[in-house]
Length: 105
Image (cartoon, rainbow, N blue to C red; front, side, top):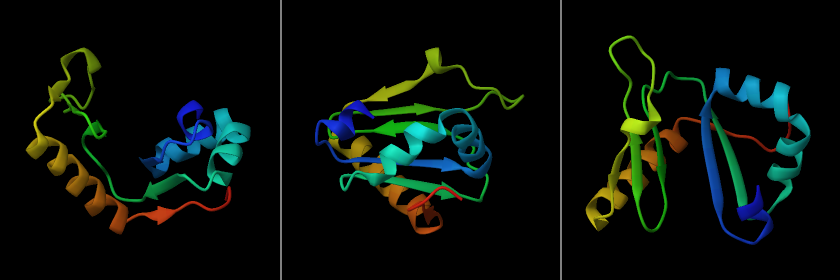
């Protein structure tokens, strides 16, 4: 939330189960976050089997182990423009099939 408070454009996209947990544990903060004009929060009802972050400088990608667990120590970090663009394209794909949260439901 600090980035959004400081004026950075921030978009978060999570699955429905993660949204429910965030709503339960951080409902007040989520309400504050979605009020920022420069902040967007999306909820995807489909299963997403990876975790990643993309910024203008890097892509951090985490793939699950065969048992479905994640180890963020094993992230793949990419700094190449092509990798960053791939991350942005992937985000755009999931954003199209997600719902933008404008109020807590």
